[in-house]
Length: 497
View 1: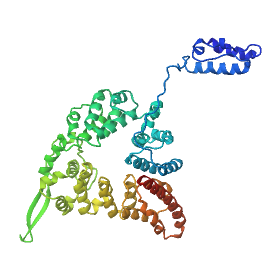
View 2: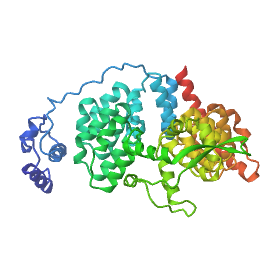
View 3: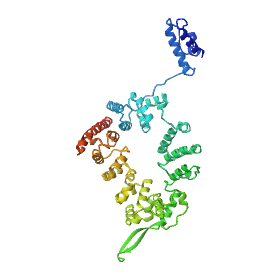
View 4: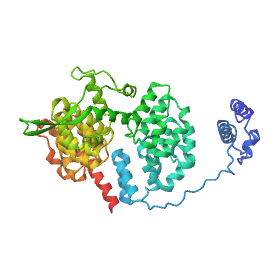
């Protein structure tokens, strides 16, 4: 560029000998920017040199300021939150309490209020990394957030109907997954149609990822398309088959039911010299299994020397049908059926498979029946997964019942949910964690504050460990917990006033 060469030459000779003048600048600059020479040659050199440098950096096409129009943000529809709420938000952000940030955002959204405008940039920055908070942050940032999103593409996470196809066709991998996940939750049929529109052009890894998203709520509506898919890769075909087998009306599941109707039945006989009736479960392990089931993922050979191949096949079949099948087939309640299976050791072998099916098909009735009437083996092998599959209220109740038997596993599982625990469950958890001060530190309590009720503030002293060397640790940890619970209390109070 000749103008830049002129600047270099002038710099080498010095502004005294060869000053830089406005006439030396490209016309594209002087047409857009009002420039004139001054008596101070050094000042002119710096000003003009800066203009030419920016001109080069911007691709040599200066911004036409006459056509650049910056519109103002629309007026907010929702009122701004209370001053107390803003004060709490300031503390949360300064101390990076992200568990409490979600609570603050949720409370603000439920109150139909907006965050003060000055906090919108900080919240939008957080939403870049914390994808799970994006929808809440968008809501509480209101019209100002929408306006800022239009100015900064990194903050523009909205995907209106008109842009869905654009994001789906041109978006990054994570953006496409988030779009499909969100759409699947709100409009399952539309999500399926979107995936169908580009299925043939997707790679194997993308197909598997998308099928995992559909796996959160498979339905009969998905079945016709899934059963018609023919893929080359084993990985994709296995993912398709797994999804099909989660739909109760699918062909594989119906085939499994047919076999189990023949293999498992109630047997009525006489006991004690014919004076008493005896009812048991009879399992025909010599049944001939059709070859088709092995093409659907059922394995033929057992790797456990205590379980025969036939038993292993039946275990897999039982784990692959909805537990409600047994109500229809055996004409009994879940409680009665569980007791019948557990009556003899050879049939109790199959109860863990029913537990797997209860979790897989999200059958709350059977899940509770298994925990209420299951034997020690069931509670040992499937307790945590059974409780985890329950709705929040029931999960809390059963966790409290079994917390002393499996404290570590249940606490780890429960803290993965956002639901607040009941006071009784929180006391049971803190009674355990306060004794295990080396395993449950401040980081644990900062994350678990979302689960722990504010009512625990008054009881923290009662959880002091009996061992002297643990008391100092617990004082530090209880101080941390007291601080975050107080902050949680302030959030709830600020939005209730």
